[in-house]
Image (cartoon, rainbow, N blue to C red):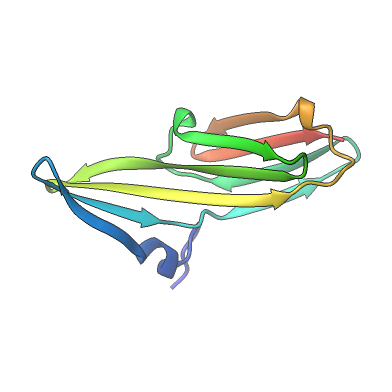
Length: 116
C-alpha cells in the first residue's frame, strides 16, 4: 500500500520502550519524504513533516558541506506517550550561499532555501 511520507519499515521501527512516570514511552524513527529543486538563483528542499512544530526541528550546516535536519514530535494516545524522530542529511554544493539559508514550516511542509 502506498505511504505518502515514510516507509512502513521506518515508521514501525521501535527503537526503545520504557516506563516513564507510569506511562509507556515509545520512540520511533521515521523517514520523511522530501523533494529537491533548483533554478538559476536558489536550491530548495521541501520535506513532509505533518504534526511537527518548527521549534522541534533543528537545521545545521556541518563542515561547510553537510546540511543536517533532525527533530521529532511527541503525542499521547491511550496513556502511551510516543515520540517520532527523524534525521536527514544532504551534501551541499560549493556554489550555494550558506549564509543566506532560510527555513519555513507551513501546513506540515518544511521548506529550506539556499541562494546560489
